[in-house]
Image (tube, rainbow, N blue to C red; front, side, top):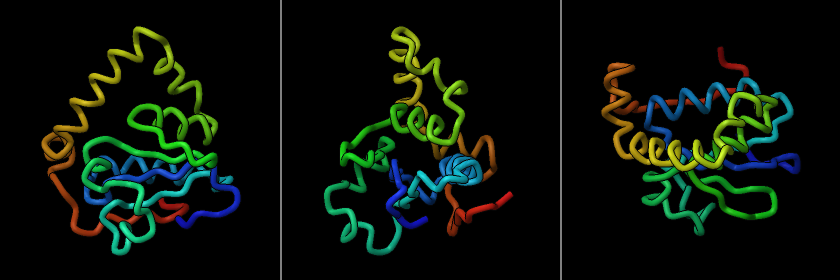
Length: 137
């Protein structure tokens, strides 16, 4: 997805991670207003287009950029994304003080071990070509 004037959030995701791509596909299908731009941190030309995003760090923890230019991280990106597609109620619990602290630690564990988790759940640690297309089912 390319960025447009309606983009409220840009998500910088790992396009080689089957679980990450799966979540981006789900978001893309629900993003009928095209409020979210998806940017694969491993895409050709990424560093030139987004020199302020360190792809190594973005591979360790999910990065997002709000329309204001503010960079957000981890579950804050997840919360904003799902809220933008009308599913705020799915992720509202992530804002509760105690849950937020615990879920952040769980997220960090997941992010660190997502290749192994992906292998367990999908049979594949990495995908060579994971594409996200609007309207994909």
